[in-house]
Image 1 (cartoon, helix red, strand yellow):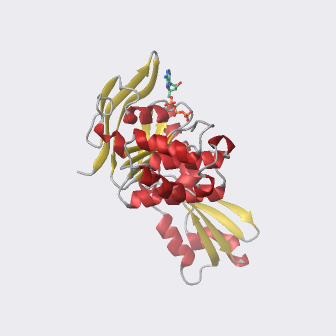
Image 2 (cartoon, rainbow, N blue to C red):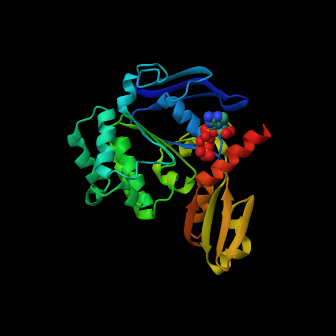
Image 3 (tube, rainbow, N blue to C red):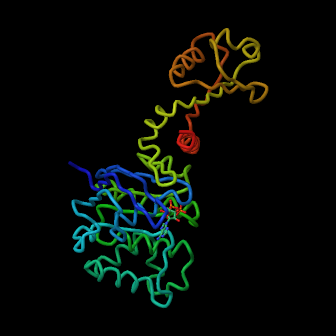
Length: 305
Ligand SMILES: Nc1ncnc2c1ncn2[C@@H]1O[C@H](COP(=O)(O)OP(=O)(O)OP(=O)(O)O)[C@@H](O)[C@H]1O
């Protein structure tokens, strides 16, 4: 059994607000899971429950075999967390900050230098955190979360405010950890960026889990058509159904390009027709539904249910 986090029928109420409503899922070793949802969907609450900072109203949670809400939570040392708004003491240096967290986690002080190096902060290690840029503070936050080689890493909106180069190196660093078997759970609004990074996506809406699966699984569930752009020779534009077969929806993009919508069951057939000998197609691009589109689809289906 390689489940590192198990959430079973968890409900969390804050007074009259039901922040998490009967949510269940398990996270496995070595997977990167994106937790997505609008503001107030319950993402941070789920992370706080996994950290044992709050207790579920009902249901159960296990993290690395332990109940995080139990007084003695042995697994905490193997759990890394990067909160949405990292705030450190501005008066001490980056090195001193990590030294403080290393003592809390009972990690050797020798682990600090390699970590600062890994997040690219060696040059600023002995500068006060108050002089750090937002990106540098975020990297210090990541170094803090990486202390002790966590087996489960919870990252709440980790790349907000980072420029594209920093985002890239951020994902490289956490990917190394995942390759060594860690479970990564990232909450984010940046769907396009998660599309390439997360093996699996959990979509939350108003405390309810509305979808959970790999992008391929979500695409199959949603049955959203794939858009196919075809560059067509002049003659071909005149009589599209003759060489492509019946098509539900299509539109002209420009003088020599059309875009068709292929349902999952007809996609392969359309591609075969478009590429067979004698077809007037010079070039094509296949654009599967994006995570943005899937997200909108699942939210809408839940709202209508
Ligand atoms: N301590 C609290 N007391 C009262 N209500 C709370 C508390 N913490 C969270 N909530 C409520 O629970 C709901 C879920 O909040 P949560 O912070 O988990 O959402 P989120 O998905 O992380 O949102 P965001 O994307 O804005 O960070 C919201 O309605 C929020 O107002």
